[in-house]
Length: 565
Image (cartoon, rainbow, N blue to C red):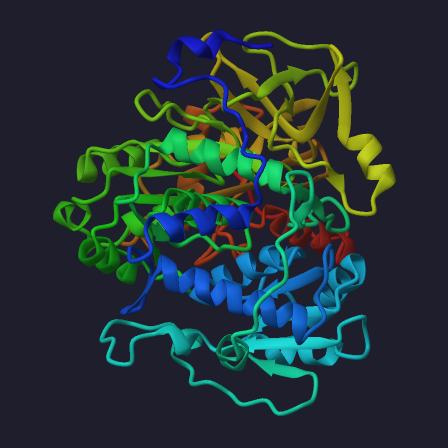
Protein backbone atom coordinates (compact mmCIF):
# COMPACT_ATOMS: atom_id res chain seq x y z
CA UNK A 1 0.00 0.00 0.00
CA UNK A 2 1.36 3.41 -0.98
CA UNK A 3 2.30 5.56 2.03
CA UNK A 4 4.43 8.34 0.50
CA UNK A 5 1.54 10.77 0.94
CA UNK A 6 1.16 10.15 4.69
CA UNK A 7 3.78 12.82 5.37
CA UNK A 8 1.39 15.41 3.93
CA UNK A 9 -1.83 14.05 5.43
CA UNK A 10 -4.21 16.63 6.97
CA UNK A 11 -4.10 16.81 10.76
CA UNK A 12 -6.63 14.07 11.31
CA UNK A 13 -6.70 10.29 11.45
CA UNK A 14 -5.85 8.29 8.35
CA UNK A 15 -8.71 5.87 8.89
CA UNK A 16 -12.41 6.32 9.62
CA UNK A 17 -15.02 3.97 11.03
CA UNK A 18 -17.94 4.05 8.58
CA UNK A 19 -21.37 4.42 10.21
CA UNK A 20 -23.53 1.32 9.92
CA UNK A 21 -26.71 3.38 9.89
CA UNK A 22 -28.76 4.41 6.86
CA UNK A 23 -28.36 7.69 5.02
CA UNK A 24 -31.81 8.73 6.26
CA UNK A 25 -30.53 8.47 9.83
CA UNK A 26 -28.13 11.33 9.07
CA UNK A 27 -31.09 13.61 8.38
CA UNK A 28 -33.00 12.37 11.41
CA UNK A 29 -30.03 13.07 13.70
CA UNK A 30 -29.54 16.59 12.30
CA UNK A 31 -33.27 17.31 12.60
CA UNK A 32 -33.18 16.20 16.25
CA UNK A 33 -30.02 18.16 16.98
CA UNK A 34 -30.82 21.36 15.08
CA UNK A 35 -34.60 21.39 14.49
CA UNK A 36 -34.85 25.14 13.94
CA UNK A 37 -31.57 25.55 12.07
CA UNK A 38 -31.94 26.47 8.42
CA UNK A 39 -31.27 23.50 6.15
CA UNK A 40 -32.14 25.00 2.76
CA UNK A 41 -32.18 28.42 1.14
CA UNK A 42 -33.90 28.42 -2.25
CA UNK A 43 -34.46 31.67 -4.13
CA UNK A 44 -35.66 33.60 -1.09
CA UNK A 45 -37.41 30.76 0.74
CA UNK A 46 -35.95 28.84 3.66
CA UNK A 47 -36.62 25.44 5.22
CA UNK A 48 -35.53 24.26 8.67
CA UNK A 49 -34.24 20.80 9.46
CA UNK A 50 -37.48 20.01 11.26
CA UNK A 51 -39.51 20.98 8.17
CA UNK A 52 -37.20 19.03 5.90
CA UNK A 53 -37.53 15.87 7.95
CA UNK A 54 -41.32 16.31 8.26
CA UNK A 55 -41.70 16.51 4.47
CA UNK A 56 -39.40 13.52 3.93
CA UNK A 57 -41.52 11.58 6.44
CA UNK A 58 -44.77 12.56 4.67
CA UNK A 59 -43.49 11.73 1.19
CA UNK A 60 -42.08 8.38 2.31
CA UNK A 61 -45.51 7.50 3.69
CA UNK A 62 -47.17 8.51 0.43
CA UNK A 63 -44.74 6.41 -1.61
CA UNK A 64 -45.48 3.37 0.52
CA UNK A 65 -49.21 3.73 1.15
CA UNK A 66 -50.43 5.43 -2.02
CA UNK A 67 -47.96 4.31 -4.71
CA UNK A 68 -47.12 0.87 -3.34
CA UNK A 69 -43.35 1.39 -3.11
CA UNK A 70 -41.77 -1.38 -1.07
CA UNK A 71 -38.29 -2.39 0.12
CA UNK A 72 -35.76 -2.65 -2.70
CA UNK A 73 -37.96 -1.05 -5.37
CA UNK A 74 -36.10 1.25 -7.74
CA UNK A 75 -37.63 4.75 -7.96
CA UNK A 76 -36.66 7.15 -10.74
CA UNK A 77 -35.66 10.61 -9.51
CA UNK A 78 -35.64 12.98 -12.48
CA UNK A 79 -35.31 16.55 -11.27
CA UNK A 80 -33.08 19.56 -11.33
CA UNK A 81 -31.56 20.95 -8.15
CA UNK A 82 -34.35 21.94 -5.81
CA UNK A 83 -35.63 21.29 -2.28
CA UNK A 84 -37.88 18.62 -3.82
CA UNK A 85 -34.86 16.68 -5.09
CA UNK A 86 -33.46 16.45 -1.56
CA UNK A 87 -36.85 15.59 -0.04
CA UNK A 88 -37.53 12.94 -2.68
CA UNK A 89 -34.09 11.37 -2.34
CA UNK A 90 -34.33 10.98 1.42
CA UNK A 91 -37.98 9.93 1.24
CA UNK A 92 -37.13 7.10 -1.14
CA UNK A 93 -34.42 5.91 1.27
CA UNK A 94 -36.81 6.35 4.23
CA UNK A 95 -39.30 4.15 2.35
CA UNK A 96 -36.57 1.43 2.19
CA UNK A 97 -36.35 1.79 -1.61
CA UNK A 98 -33.55 2.63 -4.07
CA UNK A 99 -32.95 6.04 -5.67
CA UNK A 100 -32.22 6.03 -9.41
CA UNK A 101 -31.04 9.62 -10.08
CA UNK A 102 -30.98 10.38 -13.80
CA UNK A 103 -29.74 13.30 -15.89
CA UNK A 104 -32.68 15.64 -16.68
CA UNK A 105 -31.19 16.39 -20.11
CA UNK A 106 -31.87 12.90 -21.44
CA UNK A 107 -34.41 12.28 -24.20
CA UNK A 108 -37.47 10.04 -24.03
CA UNK A 109 -35.76 7.19 -25.83
CA UNK A 110 -32.72 7.46 -23.56
CA UNK A 111 -34.92 7.45 -20.45
CA UNK A 112 -36.63 4.30 -21.69
CA UNK A 113 -33.32 2.46 -21.41
CA UNK A 114 -32.90 3.34 -17.72
CA UNK A 115 -36.48 2.49 -16.84
CA UNK A 116 -36.13 -0.89 -18.49
CA UNK A 117 -32.67 -1.57 -17.09
CA UNK A 118 -33.65 -0.79 -13.48
CA UNK A 119 -37.22 -2.14 -13.82
CA UNK A 120 -38.74 1.10 -12.55
CA UNK A 121 -42.45 1.45 -11.77
CA UNK A 122 -42.53 4.84 -10.02
CA UNK A 123 -40.96 8.14 -11.08
CA UNK A 124 -40.66 11.44 -9.20
CA UNK A 125 -40.11 14.22 -11.73
CA UNK A 126 -39.98 17.96 -12.20
CA UNK A 127 -43.01 19.18 -14.17
CA UNK A 128 -40.81 20.67 -16.91
CA UNK A 129 -39.74 17.11 -17.78
CA UNK A 130 -43.27 15.73 -18.12
CA UNK A 131 -43.34 15.64 -21.93
CA UNK A 132 -40.22 13.48 -21.94
CA UNK A 133 -41.57 10.98 -19.44
CA UNK A 134 -45.28 10.75 -20.26
CA UNK A 135 -44.83 8.60 -23.42
CA UNK A 136 -43.14 5.95 -21.27
CA UNK A 137 -46.21 5.34 -19.11
CA UNK A 138 -47.75 1.99 -20.04
CA UNK A 139 -45.18 1.47 -22.83
CA UNK A 140 -42.52 0.49 -20.27
CA UNK A 141 -42.69 -0.81 -16.70
CA UNK A 142 -43.46 2.76 -15.52
CA UNK A 143 -46.85 2.96 -13.76
CA UNK A 144 -46.89 6.14 -11.65
CA UNK A 145 -45.69 9.74 -11.93
CA UNK A 146 -45.30 12.03 -8.93
CA UNK A 147 -44.89 15.53 -10.37
CA UNK A 148 -43.34 18.57 -8.67
CA UNK A 149 -43.27 22.30 -9.43
CA UNK A 150 -40.14 24.00 -8.14
CA UNK A 151 -42.03 27.29 -7.78
CA UNK A 152 -43.91 25.83 -4.81
CA UNK A 153 -40.74 26.29 -2.75
CA UNK A 154 -39.77 29.79 -3.89
CA UNK A 155 -40.58 32.96 -2.01
CA UNK A 156 -43.23 34.78 -4.04
CA UNK A 157 -41.59 38.19 -3.58
CA UNK A 158 -38.08 37.04 -4.51
CA UNK A 159 -36.51 39.83 -6.57
CA UNK A 160 -33.45 38.07 -7.96
CA UNK A 161 -33.01 36.30 -11.29
CA UNK A 162 -34.93 33.03 -11.58
CA UNK A 163 -34.41 30.20 -14.07
CA UNK A 164 -37.56 29.59 -16.08
CA UNK A 165 -37.98 26.09 -14.63
CA UNK A 166 -38.02 27.50 -11.11
CA UNK A 167 -40.49 30.32 -11.72
CA UNK A 168 -43.01 28.31 -13.78
CA UNK A 169 -46.37 28.05 -11.95
CA UNK A 170 -47.67 24.66 -10.91
CA UNK A 171 -49.41 22.64 -13.63
CA UNK A 172 -52.42 20.54 -12.66
CA UNK A 173 -52.47 16.95 -13.96
CA UNK A 174 -55.70 15.01 -13.48
CA UNK A 175 -54.93 11.60 -14.97
CA UNK A 176 -55.40 8.54 -12.79
CA UNK A 177 -51.72 7.62 -12.55
CA UNK A 178 -50.50 11.23 -12.14
CA UNK A 179 -49.94 12.51 -8.61
CA UNK A 180 -49.10 16.06 -7.52
CA UNK A 181 -46.23 16.77 -5.15
CA UNK A 182 -48.10 19.12 -2.83
CA UNK A 183 -51.01 16.68 -2.55
CA UNK A 184 -48.54 14.01 -1.47
CA UNK A 185 -46.93 16.25 1.17
CA UNK A 186 -50.25 17.54 2.50
CA UNK A 187 -51.73 14.04 2.78
CA UNK A 188 -49.32 13.46 5.70
CA UNK A 189 -49.22 9.67 5.40
CA UNK A 190 -46.94 8.01 7.94
CA UNK A 191 -44.36 5.56 6.60
CA UNK A 192 -43.80 2.11 8.02
CA UNK A 193 -40.72 1.02 9.94
CA UNK A 194 -37.40 2.12 8.50
CA UNK A 195 -35.59 -1.07 7.51
CA UNK A 196 -32.51 0.08 5.60
CA UNK A 197 -29.27 -1.44 6.83
CA UNK A 198 -25.59 -0.82 6.16
CA UNK A 199 -25.30 -3.16 3.18
CA UNK A 200 -28.71 -2.50 1.66
CA UNK A 201 -28.70 -0.91 -1.80
CA UNK A 202 -29.90 2.71 -1.65
CA UNK A 203 -28.79 4.46 -4.84
CA UNK A 204 -28.06 3.45 -8.41
CA UNK A 205 -26.17 6.25 -10.19
CA UNK A 206 -25.47 5.40 -13.81
CA UNK A 207 -22.20 5.82 -15.68
CA UNK A 208 -22.27 8.27 -18.58
CA UNK A 209 -22.20 5.55 -21.21
CA UNK A 210 -19.23 7.07 -23.08
CA UNK A 211 -17.63 3.63 -23.41
CA UNK A 212 -20.76 1.58 -24.12
CA UNK A 213 -24.22 1.31 -22.60
CA UNK A 214 -24.67 3.12 -19.27
CA UNK A 215 -24.26 0.92 -16.23
CA UNK A 216 -25.94 1.29 -12.84
CA UNK A 217 -23.42 1.47 -9.99
CA UNK A 218 -24.78 -0.33 -6.93
CA UNK A 219 -24.13 1.73 -3.82
CA UNK A 220 -25.20 0.83 -0.31
CA UNK A 221 -25.64 2.86 2.85
CA UNK A 222 -22.11 1.80 3.76
CA UNK A 223 -20.41 2.97 0.55
CA UNK A 224 -22.25 6.31 0.49
CA UNK A 225 -21.64 6.91 4.19
CA UNK A 226 -17.91 6.32 3.65
CA UNK A 227 -17.57 9.30 1.33
CA UNK A 228 -20.14 11.45 3.14
CA UNK A 229 -18.31 11.15 6.46
CA UNK A 230 -14.94 11.31 4.71
CA UNK A 231 -15.89 14.57 2.99
CA UNK A 232 -17.12 15.99 6.30
CA UNK A 233 -13.81 15.43 8.08
CA UNK A 234 -11.62 16.39 5.11
CA UNK A 235 -13.54 19.63 4.48
CA UNK A 236 -13.66 20.70 8.14
CA UNK A 237 -17.27 21.79 8.13
CA UNK A 238 -19.51 22.76 11.05
CA UNK A 239 -23.25 23.32 11.45
CA UNK A 240 -22.53 26.99 10.66
CA UNK A 241 -21.01 26.20 7.27
CA UNK A 242 -22.95 27.48 4.24
CA UNK A 243 -22.67 25.42 1.05
CA UNK A 244 -23.32 26.86 -2.42
CA UNK A 245 -24.94 23.97 -4.32
CA UNK A 246 -24.37 24.44 -8.04
CA UNK A 247 -23.36 20.94 -9.15
CA UNK A 248 -26.33 18.75 -10.12
CA UNK A 249 -27.53 16.54 -7.28
CA UNK A 250 -28.08 13.61 -9.65
CA UNK A 251 -24.31 13.50 -10.21
CA UNK A 252 -22.24 11.83 -7.48
CA UNK A 253 -20.05 14.85 -6.67
CA UNK A 254 -23.00 17.20 -6.13
CA UNK A 255 -24.93 14.42 -4.41
CA UNK A 256 -22.24 13.76 -1.79
CA UNK A 257 -20.60 17.16 -1.33
CA UNK A 258 -23.54 19.54 -1.79
CA UNK A 259 -26.35 17.41 -0.29
CA UNK A 260 -25.31 14.41 1.84
CA UNK A 261 -22.35 16.01 3.58
CA UNK A 262 -24.17 19.24 4.51
CA UNK A 263 -27.08 17.21 5.90
CA UNK A 264 -24.70 14.99 7.89
CA UNK A 265 -23.11 18.08 9.42
CA UNK A 266 -26.39 19.92 9.96
CA UNK A 267 -25.23 22.86 7.86
CA UNK A 268 -26.96 25.05 5.30
CA UNK A 269 -27.46 24.47 1.56
CA UNK A 270 -27.95 27.41 -0.83
CA UNK A 271 -29.43 25.79 -3.93
CA UNK A 272 -29.26 26.89 -7.56
CA UNK A 273 -31.52 25.10 -10.04
CA UNK A 274 -29.52 26.28 -13.05
CA UNK A 275 -25.99 27.63 -13.27
CA UNK A 276 -25.77 31.39 -13.65
CA UNK A 277 -22.49 33.08 -12.80
CA UNK A 278 -24.11 36.40 -11.83
CA UNK A 279 -26.58 34.66 -9.51
CA UNK A 280 -23.71 32.68 -7.98
CA UNK A 281 -21.88 35.90 -7.09
CA UNK A 282 -25.02 37.36 -5.57
CA UNK A 283 -25.73 34.26 -3.48
CA UNK A 284 -22.17 33.98 -2.21
CA UNK A 285 -22.31 37.63 -1.18
CA UNK A 286 -25.78 37.78 0.37
CA UNK A 287 -25.95 34.30 1.90
CA UNK A 288 -22.35 34.37 3.15
CA UNK A 289 -21.47 31.06 1.53
CA UNK A 290 -18.34 29.50 3.01
CA UNK A 291 -17.91 26.29 0.97
CA UNK A 292 -18.29 25.74 -2.74
CA UNK A 293 -17.70 22.41 -4.46
CA UNK A 294 -17.69 22.95 -8.19
CA UNK A 295 -16.03 21.75 -11.38
CA UNK A 296 -13.30 23.33 -13.43
CA UNK A 297 -15.47 24.41 -16.38
CA UNK A 298 -17.97 26.14 -14.05
CA UNK A 299 -15.18 27.91 -12.19
CA UNK A 300 -13.56 29.01 -15.46
CA UNK A 301 -16.85 30.66 -16.45
CA UNK A 302 -17.27 32.19 -12.99
CA UNK A 303 -13.81 33.76 -12.98
CA UNK A 304 -14.23 35.17 -16.49
CA UNK A 305 -17.07 37.39 -15.23
CA UNK A 306 -15.82 40.99 -15.63
CA UNK A 307 -17.99 42.19 -12.73
CA UNK A 308 -16.34 39.89 -10.17
CA UNK A 309 -14.71 41.69 -7.21
CA UNK A 310 -12.70 40.33 -4.25
CA UNK A 311 -15.19 41.66 -1.71
CA UNK A 312 -17.95 39.58 -3.34
CA UNK A 313 -16.17 36.38 -2.28
CA UNK A 314 -14.92 37.37 1.17
CA UNK A 315 -17.08 34.79 2.98
CA UNK A 316 -15.60 31.81 1.14
CA UNK A 317 -13.22 29.60 3.10
CA UNK A 318 -13.06 26.61 0.72
CA UNK A 319 -13.37 26.09 -3.04
CA UNK A 320 -12.88 22.56 -4.25
CA UNK A 321 -13.89 20.15 -6.99
CA UNK A 322 -12.51 18.59 -10.14
CA UNK A 323 -13.89 17.29 -13.42
CA UNK A 324 -11.13 18.58 -15.72
CA UNK A 325 -7.77 20.30 -15.70
CA UNK A 326 -7.97 23.73 -14.04
CA UNK A 327 -5.73 26.32 -15.75
CA UNK A 328 -2.78 27.49 -13.64
CA UNK A 329 -3.34 31.12 -14.63
CA UNK A 330 -6.90 30.98 -13.33
CA UNK A 331 -5.70 29.26 -10.18
CA UNK A 332 -3.51 32.28 -9.57
CA UNK A 333 -6.43 34.65 -10.32
CA UNK A 334 -8.61 32.76 -7.84
CA UNK A 335 -5.90 33.05 -5.19
CA UNK A 336 -5.54 36.80 -5.80
CA UNK A 337 -9.32 37.24 -5.45
CA UNK A 338 -9.89 35.03 -2.42
CA UNK A 339 -6.60 33.93 -0.88
CA UNK A 340 -7.82 30.37 -1.57
CA UNK A 341 -6.39 27.58 -3.67
CA UNK A 342 -8.71 25.42 -5.75
CA UNK A 343 -8.51 22.06 -3.99
CA UNK A 344 -8.91 19.41 -6.67
CA UNK A 345 -10.09 15.86 -6.21
CA UNK A 346 -10.86 12.73 -8.19
CA UNK A 347 -13.54 10.07 -8.20
CA UNK A 348 -16.12 8.25 -10.30
CA UNK A 349 -19.73 7.12 -10.21
CA UNK A 350 -18.37 3.72 -9.25
CA UNK A 351 -16.81 5.25 -6.12
CA UNK A 352 -19.70 7.64 -5.31
CA UNK A 353 -17.32 10.65 -5.75
CA UNK A 354 -13.88 10.99 -4.19
CA UNK A 355 -11.09 8.45 -3.87
CA UNK A 356 -8.40 11.16 -4.01
CA UNK A 357 -8.38 14.74 -2.75
CA UNK A 358 -5.68 17.32 -2.27
CA UNK A 359 -4.82 18.16 1.36
CA UNK A 360 -6.56 21.51 2.01
CA UNK A 361 -3.39 23.05 3.45
CA UNK A 362 -1.01 21.67 0.81
CA UNK A 363 -2.75 21.32 -2.55
CA UNK A 364 -0.99 20.98 -5.88
CA UNK A 365 -2.31 22.47 -9.08
CA UNK A 366 -3.66 20.16 -11.81
CA UNK A 367 -3.36 17.26 -9.40
CA UNK A 368 -5.86 14.60 -8.28
CA UNK A 369 -4.54 14.74 -4.74
CA UNK A 370 -3.73 11.88 -2.40
CA UNK A 371 -5.76 8.76 -1.60
CA UNK A 372 -8.41 9.60 1.03
CA UNK A 373 -9.43 7.71 4.17
CA UNK A 374 -8.73 3.95 3.93
CA UNK A 375 -8.15 4.07 0.15
CA UNK A 376 -5.42 1.90 -1.32
CA UNK A 377 -4.66 3.41 -4.76
CA UNK A 378 -2.02 2.02 -7.10
CA UNK A 379 -0.71 2.42 -10.64
CA UNK A 380 -0.51 -0.78 -12.70
CA UNK A 381 0.42 -1.74 -16.22
CA UNK A 382 -3.04 -2.16 -17.84
CA UNK A 383 -1.89 -5.24 -19.77
CA UNK A 384 0.48 -7.13 -17.46
CA UNK A 385 -1.11 -5.83 -14.21
CA UNK A 386 2.39 -5.26 -12.81
CA UNK A 387 2.45 -2.54 -10.14
CA UNK A 388 4.42 0.54 -11.24
CA UNK A 389 6.45 3.06 -9.25
CA UNK A 390 7.06 6.79 -8.90
CA UNK A 391 6.57 8.70 -12.14
CA UNK A 392 5.56 5.66 -14.20
CA UNK A 393 2.32 5.98 -16.20
CA UNK A 394 -0.29 3.25 -15.90
CA UNK A 395 -3.90 2.58 -14.96
CA UNK A 396 -5.22 3.88 -11.64
CA UNK A 397 -6.81 1.11 -9.54
CA UNK A 398 -8.49 1.65 -6.17
CA UNK A 399 -9.61 -0.32 -3.17
CA UNK A 400 -11.66 1.46 -0.53
CA UNK A 401 -14.89 1.56 1.48
CA UNK A 402 -16.62 3.78 -1.10
CA UNK A 403 -16.17 1.42 -4.06
CA UNK A 404 -19.48 0.12 -5.43
CA UNK A 405 -20.48 -3.49 -4.82
CA UNK A 406 -20.83 -3.94 -8.59
CA UNK A 407 -22.76 -2.93 -11.71
CA UNK A 408 -26.48 -3.69 -11.66
CA UNK A 409 -27.30 -6.81 -13.72
CA UNK A 410 -23.90 -6.73 -15.49
CA UNK A 411 -22.10 -9.97 -14.67
CA UNK A 412 -19.55 -9.77 -17.48
CA UNK A 413 -18.71 -6.12 -16.80
CA UNK A 414 -18.27 -6.94 -13.11
CA UNK A 415 -15.75 -9.62 -13.95
CA UNK A 416 -13.76 -7.13 -16.04
CA UNK A 417 -14.09 -4.19 -13.65
CA UNK A 418 -12.12 -5.63 -10.76
CA UNK A 419 -8.68 -7.12 -10.29
CA UNK A 420 -7.16 -8.87 -7.28
CA UNK A 421 -3.80 -7.63 -5.97
CA UNK A 422 -2.22 -8.87 -2.75
CA UNK A 423 -5.47 -10.56 -1.75
CA UNK A 424 -7.52 -7.34 -2.13
CA UNK A 425 -10.08 -6.48 -4.79
CA UNK A 426 -9.33 -3.30 -6.75
CA UNK A 427 -11.61 -1.39 -9.10
CA UNK A 428 -10.07 -0.61 -12.49
CA UNK A 429 -10.83 3.04 -13.19
CA UNK A 430 -9.83 3.07 -16.87
CA UNK A 431 -7.90 6.28 -16.17
CA UNK A 432 -4.19 6.54 -16.88
CA UNK A 433 -2.15 8.33 -14.25
CA UNK A 434 1.02 8.52 -12.22
CA UNK A 435 2.12 9.58 -8.76
CA UNK A 436 5.09 11.69 -7.76
CA UNK A 437 7.74 11.21 -5.09
CA UNK A 438 5.36 12.67 -2.48
CA UNK A 439 2.53 10.28 -3.31
CA UNK A 440 0.33 12.86 -5.07
CA UNK A 441 -1.57 11.41 -8.04
CA UNK A 442 -1.85 13.05 -11.46
CA UNK A 443 -4.14 12.02 -14.28
CA UNK A 444 -2.70 11.51 -17.72
CA UNK A 445 -5.91 10.62 -19.54
CA UNK A 446 -8.56 8.02 -20.16
CA UNK A 447 -7.13 4.76 -21.47
CA UNK A 448 -9.40 5.03 -24.52
CA UNK A 449 -8.62 8.71 -25.15
CA UNK A 450 -4.95 8.31 -26.04
CA UNK A 451 -3.95 9.59 -29.49
CA UNK A 452 -1.51 7.41 -31.45
CA UNK A 453 0.34 9.82 -33.74
CA UNK A 454 2.98 8.06 -35.84
CA UNK A 455 3.50 5.60 -33.00
CA UNK A 456 3.88 8.31 -30.36
CA UNK A 457 1.44 8.37 -27.43
CA UNK A 458 -0.22 11.76 -27.06
CA UNK A 459 -2.41 12.40 -24.02
CA UNK A 460 -5.01 15.12 -24.76
CA UNK A 461 -5.18 16.30 -21.14
CA UNK A 462 -1.46 17.13 -21.22
CA UNK A 463 -1.83 19.12 -24.45
CA UNK A 464 -4.83 20.96 -23.00
CA UNK A 465 -2.82 21.93 -19.90
CA UNK A 466 -0.21 23.55 -22.17
CA UNK A 467 -2.85 25.38 -24.21
CA UNK A 468 -4.35 26.90 -21.08
CA UNK A 469 -1.09 28.79 -20.61
CA UNK A 470 -1.82 30.85 -23.73
CA UNK A 471 -3.41 34.14 -22.59
CA UNK A 472 -6.16 33.95 -25.25
CA UNK A 473 -7.40 30.45 -24.33
CA UNK A 474 -10.43 30.29 -22.05
CA UNK A 475 -11.27 26.61 -22.67
CA UNK A 476 -9.60 23.89 -24.71
CA UNK A 477 -10.55 20.39 -25.79
CA UNK A 478 -8.07 18.17 -27.63
CA UNK A 479 -9.04 15.12 -29.70
CA UNK A 480 -7.47 12.71 -32.13
CA UNK A 481 -8.45 13.11 -35.79
CA UNK A 482 -7.65 10.95 -38.84
CA UNK A 483 -4.43 11.76 -40.66
CA UNK A 484 -3.28 10.05 -43.89
CA UNK A 485 0.40 10.12 -42.86
CA UNK A 486 0.38 9.87 -39.07
CA UNK A 487 -2.69 7.63 -38.67
CA UNK A 488 -4.00 10.02 -36.06
CA UNK A 489 -3.02 13.55 -35.27
CA UNK A 490 -3.91 16.23 -32.76
CA UNK A 491 -6.70 18.78 -33.12
CA UNK A 492 -7.56 21.44 -30.56
CA UNK A 493 -10.98 23.06 -30.19
CA UNK A 494 -10.65 26.37 -28.39
CA UNK A 495 -12.94 28.97 -26.84
CA UNK A 496 -11.24 32.34 -26.67
CA UNK A 497 -11.34 34.79 -23.79
CA UNK A 498 -13.41 37.91 -24.34
CA UNK A 499 -11.48 40.52 -26.30
CA UNK A 500 -9.33 38.09 -28.27
CA UNK A 501 -11.77 37.29 -31.09
CA UNK A 502 -10.39 38.65 -34.37
CA UNK A 503 -7.03 39.36 -32.76
CA UNK A 504 -5.78 35.77 -32.55
CA UNK A 505 -5.92 33.31 -35.46
CA UNK A 506 -5.95 29.52 -35.42
CA UNK A 507 -2.51 29.61 -37.05
CA UNK A 508 -1.20 31.76 -34.20
CA UNK A 509 -2.19 29.10 -31.67
CA UNK A 510 -0.45 26.40 -33.71
CA UNK A 511 2.75 28.44 -34.01
CA UNK A 512 2.70 29.16 -30.26
CA UNK A 513 2.15 25.45 -29.54
CA UNK A 514 5.18 24.49 -31.65
CA UNK A 515 7.39 26.50 -29.32
CA UNK A 516 5.96 25.01 -26.13
CA UNK A 517 5.40 21.32 -26.94
CA UNK A 518 7.29 18.41 -28.42
CA UNK A 519 6.94 18.05 -32.19
CA UNK A 520 4.71 14.98 -31.95
CA UNK A 521 2.36 16.61 -29.39
CA UNK A 522 1.44 20.04 -30.65
CA UNK A 523 -1.96 20.42 -32.40
CA UNK A 524 -1.75 20.35 -36.17
CA UNK A 525 -5.28 21.71 -36.43
CA UNK A 526 -7.07 24.33 -34.37
CA UNK A 527 -10.73 25.31 -34.55
CA UNK A 528 -12.30 28.15 -32.61
CA UNK A 529 -15.73 27.53 -31.10
CA UNK A 530 -18.22 29.71 -29.24
CA UNK A 531 -19.18 26.81 -26.96
CA UNK A 532 -18.54 23.10 -26.43
CA UNK A 533 -21.01 20.25 -26.09
CA UNK A 534 -21.24 19.63 -22.36
CA UNK A 535 -22.75 17.15 -19.94
CA UNK A 536 -25.19 18.62 -17.44
CA UNK A 537 -22.49 18.17 -14.79
CA UNK A 538 -20.26 20.54 -16.79
CA UNK A 539 -17.81 18.12 -18.40
CA UNK A 540 -16.78 18.70 -22.00
CA UNK A 541 -18.05 15.97 -24.31
CA UNK A 542 -14.71 15.36 -26.01
CA UNK A 543 -15.97 12.14 -27.56
CA UNK A 544 -18.73 14.00 -29.43
CA UNK A 545 -16.21 16.42 -30.94
CA UNK A 546 -13.98 13.52 -31.94
CA UNK A 547 -16.86 11.59 -33.49
CA UNK A 548 -17.77 14.65 -35.56
CA UNK A 549 -14.24 14.71 -37.00
CA UNK A 550 -14.20 11.00 -37.83
CA UNK A 551 -17.68 11.25 -39.35
CA UNK A 552 -16.39 13.90 -41.77
CA UNK A 553 -13.91 11.36 -43.11
CA UNK A 554 -16.54 8.63 -43.39
CA UNK A 555 -18.94 10.81 -45.34
CA UNK A 556 -16.29 12.36 -47.57
CA UNK A 557 -13.17 10.15 -47.55
CA UNK A 558 -11.59 11.90 -50.55
CA UNK A 559 -11.82 15.38 -49.05
CA UNK A 560 -8.59 17.22 -48.37
CA UNK A 561 -7.67 17.36 -44.70
CA UNK A 562 -8.11 20.72 -42.98
CA UNK A 563 -5.30 23.16 -43.45
CA UNK A 564 -2.59 22.88 -40.84
CA UNK A 565 0.67 24.62 -40.14
